[in-house]
Amino acid sequence: MTAEALSGLSSLRAPTSEDIDALARAAFERLPASFRRLSDSLVIQVVDFPDDETLNEMGAESEFDLLGLFRGRGLAQRGATEETGELPNMIWLYRRPLLDFWCEGEDTLDEVVTHVLVHEIGHHFGLSDADMEAIEEQAR
Image (tube, rainbow, N blue to C red; front, side, top):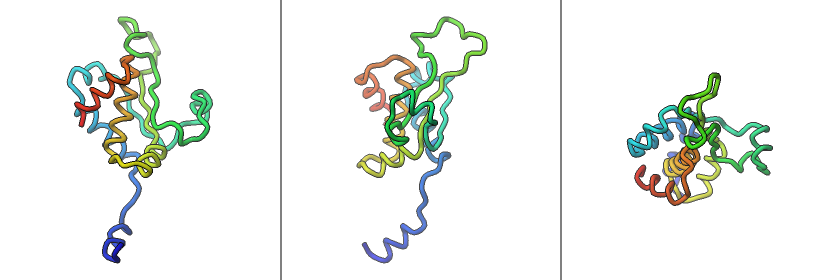
């Protein structure tokens, strides 16, 4: 690598939680309108790592094992009305595992975030992997 190319790298920084959040929100906006309407109440959170309770619950061997997680009751499990005091459905995106996965692969960070977001939203709907792949294609 040339000295000029190296000097361009010296100003780079790791994407922040806000950067990942912006990618996730942009990916959400690219989803089909009908999909977005049914996902409107989902809360998307970006944190560095899953907490210890989540790691234990999911049987993760490392804090890098989970890229994202859906928490809540999917549409099929919800009644016609929400129960009093019920927390909103949430999607957790884990920044450091996402970045690690991105660094080891060939996909762009946007593609990785979109894939994980669609997969986690798919749990909200109870979708199959094939269904999620079709929706993800529409979000590209």
